Image (cartoon, rainbow, N blue to C red; front, side, top):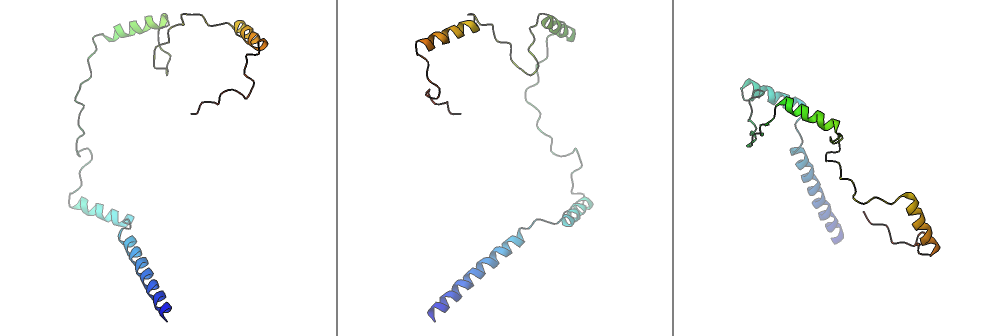
Amino acid sequence: MQMKNALTIVAAVAAAMFTQASFAQAASAPAARAEVKADTKAAAKAKELTPAGEGEVMAKPAVKPAKSSKTRAERKAETKSAAKSKELVPAGEGSPKAAAATTPAATRGDVKADTAAAAKAKELTPAGEGSPAPKK
């Protein structure tokens, strides 16, 4: 008999918890489209809506852009001369071209000769036995 009472109490507590959760969901349900439209119409009728373009004005930037000391013609002439001397940065690269290397790179033949000499002296690391690849 005591087990039956315990089961009844557990069932009653569970039912109370589930009904509370369902009432909480119903209270926080979003408004229907018709309700939103009705609220908007009522606010418009009561002249509580802010007309388009008359809301809060966004803050203007504190710093004004610097005025150029060159005329448009001077800038155009400068750009044309830079284009002729191939000093312009290609579109999308965003930074000046890198300076040319001061030491010449090894030619393909030099690299092949060095590799062949290392292979002959058995100084090359066998495939798969090198250091692990760096982690990204």
